[in-house]
Image 1 (cartoon, helix red, strand yellow):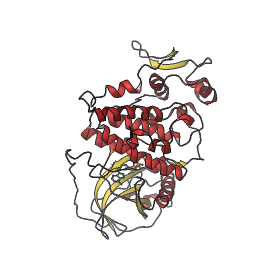
Image 2 (cartoon, protein in one colour):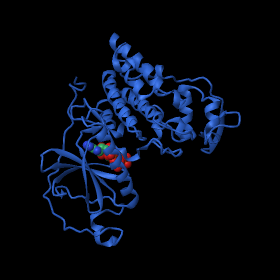
Image 3 (tube, helix red, strand yellow):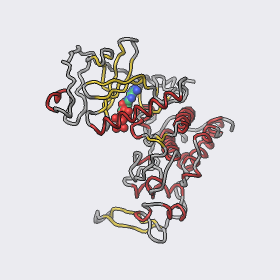
Image 4 (cartoon, rainbow, N blue to C red):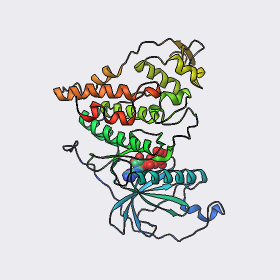
Length: 381
Ligand SMILES: Nc1ncnc2c1ncn2[C@@H]1O[C@H](COP(=O)(O)OP(=O)(O)OP(=O)(O)O)[C@@H](O)[C@H]1O
């Protein structure tokens, strides 16, 4: 099915500069940093010249993106003629180690899915270039943040498209679980789609870890997609990715961020407005609950006073949810344009699906396996 059949195709800009072969050096930056200064910018990103050939095989075509860990370039594989995306890890010890970990986790995922059916980005190989670990991936088109900007600004994309994406995303989560891995950074930016937009792949395993390495820290996962167990300081597992996936799918359909909190405290407030109170039992077990709740488990909302601009703490005995998922979904931009009966049924199934992804208590949240047989995904509605 081509869910974006009548949509405009994104233009491609490929820069074709004349390749300038740099002299080779194998001196490691840690031994004499001045010798290879020119290859990197002050922050350790590789100063790439477009057209340059890496590993005697990949002719670089254009810059694709820059993240905290790496810069990503599009290149042509001179052996096969295919386009690839090369993630060049920043030249510093911490990033290099993080890159090696990402490489090991990606290998585990590739081995567990030899037929490429589980919607995780394919790692083709890796090499080193001037002290930068380089990971070579299949080339994809855009991430879901850009898809939303381009095709669904403020209104989101169709429920049918969301359903296709949901199934593929949960297939990737089922593979991660089979490999005992947590992704820990699921959000529209880390999900890439093919040129036709019909197929998505989960990417950026840079924050991923083995499920047994779950050190409690309140800042894991990008804030808007961060599950309550992370913020409250509870042990966490696969359910944290299901929460982020729920937030991501809501955003795809509505074009709006579900919980756009400016802090962890505000995130909790927004979550309770949608899902109601946390149970006392959950708060009792949480390491950081005393930062957000008083002794009687009343929420302490950290707010800015509108007049003075000063930070004030307001006690909010929030009990009843006031902005439930159903009313938010039903008032989304694309719904007000009218729906067919089939779309309406699919939408109600989507509401139920999201409610189950966003259960506050992690061990009661839907698992990836359960998600894949939910009526929203199977279509048996
Ligand atoms: N295989 C690919 N095909 C096309 N574009 C890609 C590919 N891999 C990455 N990109 C682009 O590069 C961006 C950064 O990639 P990635 O998130 O893996 O790097 P990162 O350094 O870990 O970033 P961050 O710090 O944001 O987590 C992506 O959002 C995407 O736009």
